[in-house]
Image 1 (tube, helix red, strand yellow):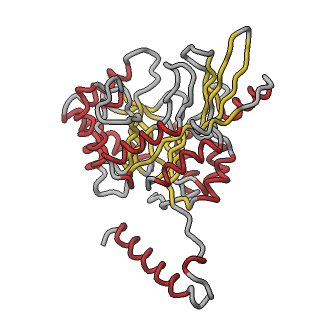
Image 2 (tube, helix red, strand yellow):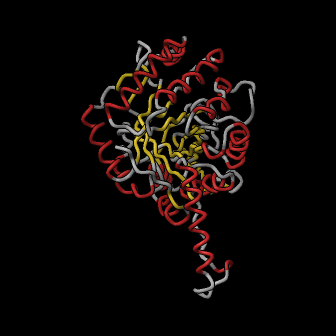
Image 3 (cartoon, helix red, strand yellow):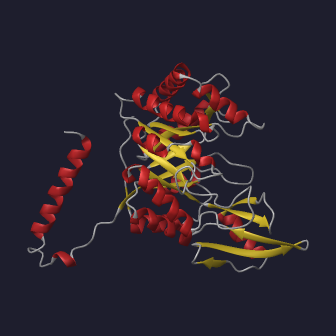
Length: 370
């Protein structure tokens, strides 16, 4: 009997005992307290980014409501393998991993192909990894060795800049990593860009075969944010209607029990009708609104707050995320029976979301094997 079957039988037994005890307690089934829905909460983790704080304080304050963290510490190297990102020491990684696991928070090593300082480098490195069976096997071997040596609970693949012609090769890479983990209690998670349909023209998400990835990965993190972002004019980062469409497509091709909905915890400050906004945390957005004496308005249609202000004769519009907008996305995840939520990123959020999570959900936590 596998773990899932044991859990189902245990749940059934518990429900039987509860129902049997209700008459003894003088309660009808309708009066019985309802169990909170269970969600897994993943937090993307980074060190400080300029004036933005590191994720550690958020982890330390909210560990009881966090299932997994995915530290942004590793990336593809120029030899088809994995390298530690500059500025992070092995000692830092060891301390963070030990701390999280002591708090019963699993740690997935996040491997990305971003922020190399020159255009096209991430795509070039992904091509080297995806080239053929041997290159994929080499990469999977390095990942397996890294996870084993460093005591991680698995891997989060966040390889975003790939070509359409490498679509099937990426799915094969996920399969290879999963096969390498086959005899170990380790997690393979894959982050994918948001999509609202199959092969949508102009979407860079067409480079990812959701169905195949979902077949091999344990978790598929659908990054449902940046509906409006750096390349666009102002607008909600993840509107209610758009997130609904992303989730409906995702659940049509990936088992919903594997889907983790990526939710934003940040904001953008645009000069009106111009791209390349300024990146903000929740606290920065609120401080900006206060300093400009601008009153944020919550758009119930979009499910997110925004405000406007003027600086040097230029109109600005700020869209950001708060507890109320987080609730909108969490309710979508609950309604569609998704596995959980993944927050980009810890340390930027409205801290009130943790009260909401603790009161409305039972956070799934699986003990680390380390």
